[in-house]
Amino acid sequence: MTQTTPPSGPTGRHAAPGRPDTPEPPDAPQRPGLPPGGARSTAAPWRALAIVLAGAFMAVLDTFIVLVAAPAIQADLHSSAADVQLILAGYQLSYALALITGARLGDRFGRKRLFMTGMALFTLSSVGCALAPGSGSLIAARLVQGLGAAAMFPQVFAVIQVLIPAARRPKAFGVLGAVIGMATMSGQLVGGLLIAADLFGTSWRPVFWVNVPVGLVTLLLAARFVPESRAPEARRLDLRGAVVLTVALSLLVVPLVEGRAYGWPLWAWLGLAASVPAFAAFGLVERRVEVRGGSPLVRLRLLRERPFAVGMTLVVLTYAGINSLFLVLSLTLQDGLGTDALGAGLVYTPFAVAFFAASLVAGRLARFGRRVLQLGALTGALGFLGTIALTLNAGATLTAWELVLTLLLVGAGNGLLVTPLLNAVLGTIRPGEVGMASGVLSTGQQIGGSVGVALVGILYYGALGGAAHHDTGAYGQALAAALVLNVALTGAISALLPLLPDAAARRA
Image (cartoon, rainbow, N blue to C red; front, side, top):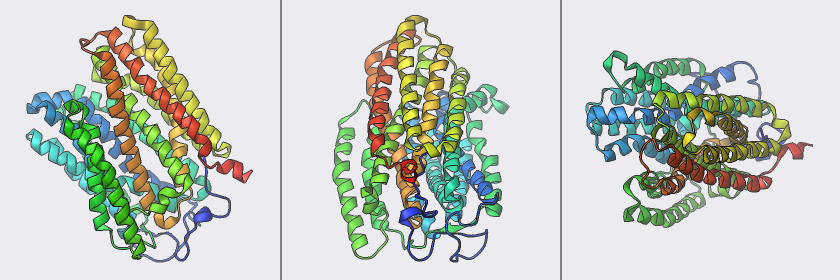
């Protein structure tokens, strides 16, 4: 994994003056203390990281597990197509919109406190989802669930930067990448298993009940073993900036998530166009806050720093490819090849195993720097090209299991690419800005995923035309057409990687 922290110290050339970002033992008062990783090289930081990773797993899992349950939800609640879209997308929308605010609240009030608050909200809203008597209540509970995830997820990045020694952060980011990959892939499999089991005749509801015991146990463990930390420079939350950013993100993300489902109506295009001046207005608001000596939601100079700016661009491109792949592959497996939800989940399993293994290996290859990222991009591109060739050659005889070998290459490539990027983006961030940077990073992941899904939908449905379900040849051609986007994205990633500072070369 690319390690961008120079050998001069745990926080590199961006070490903040004054008080360091300080981890505390549970229930201890906030006080100046050890720099991130300074003397916490015992098992305790890894135990704390394992606990918060459970929250990251749940946040990502709930994006995908509901995809499998959608048909059962629609049949049971007599939901309209629009209701189903909001049940699926409402979580993603509130999650994306609140990530930066959640990260900054963690800086100000404590990362442990925000993680536990988010986990409690996520768990309670999961109960609301499981008990929902109708579509409206389920949509409302999903929106709250997204807010809980947004409070939890950014704290994971901050915990890594604050508790894990600099030399071990590549390994920590490798584990985080593996957890994200496993959550993404297992959503299909776990959802399929729960729907097929139909526990106590409750159909789709166990996909939400499963969050409750995990959430309660995680809360108990976090209260006992996760130390508190705050950013020393954190001040009052920039409410004006939060409002303007929420409006800007809404104008961008809502059309990207909902536009295709509604046939790209005029309001979607107007929203996308209006997001440009809205983001410009956000920049002006943040600049004024900083000039007045306040604490802006996002420090604009962060986006002007080359390592972060290039890394963020790469993250957006990478997640555009990942999310778009999941969409078209799920549609092809279930609608085109006639695979049920459980069978589709099983096809994803080798992909998940390859992603998990490569993520862990990437952490051990940090000394090779940027070359690991290039290897990941190349491996993924070979997997995509192989899948295109396979589907076009097989035609109407294509089967689900024929895709496994090329998907192994895609999974391994993504594992080598995603996890080093997380470390590369955050590796040179000063301690007081870790929460801010992690919120921006997480938002970039969501925006990249939304853009990728919107673009791949145009290619996929354009190639599919009016083909009937289970028309294997037509769905295979549509999959091949859509994967051209993934090949283009990996090409763009490879072209941009030389612009990313290579800490391995600098150390050499």
